[in-house]
Image (cartoon, rainbow, N blue to C red; front, top):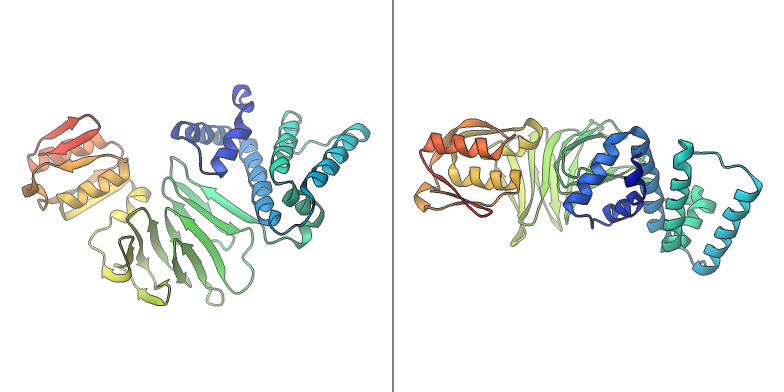
Length: 330
């Protein structure tokens, strides 16, 4: 573990779990996680304690101050009477105990309940976050999830009961293992997506929640409404008009974060600009309304915004003007 980072990684991880990290801090965490498998395991244990503490703290009536004092005395006594067996490597065991103590100080009731009554706790929940890069994760049933940037998924360590339930924030593509006896259910915003085994994309952002089917059949429900959609169809709820709408898909742009390609087939310029702004977190505007519906027929690699805009300029014979952080097509 990087020695300089070791001094503040616990604080950064807490901020990440609270979704309070800046872009620079998230990049620092992602780099730290990629440095070694030990760092990844450290974070998984850290997150486990955090999640269990939040779940159990609300259920306990233990005097928090007294509980913390008993825990502190027990750990001090243990260190005096018995050797400590490191979890991973000797230099990391103290850091892990420091993390446990820090979380216990703020959520001591839940942590102590987990230690002494863990066998009666709710099923262990796992959370995967993508940060600044896409992430591929395999769920307990073998289903595969590709998370777009700045997205997260939470699910139990094992699927039990009559359903396979997960919750999503952001955007992800699901390839669900077929199981007719146990439906796969996704909670996203205030919508529910239910399947038996299929592949589809789910996206939730500030403007809308959208489900696009690639293979199979998907049921999308919101309040007392529901629709069933099949390949090349989508279900959408706009934040400005919260009605469940079923429609045909006009393009395959939902694949861009998996294929790193934008495939345009008579795609109007306004639609390409919309997806470029989303892909690159850019501020591109069309300076002349006459250009809005100009069709584009080409495939763009999504590695560089500048190269994409250069190709758009050549294809449509338009100018690309940079004005501060804004990019104007005219």
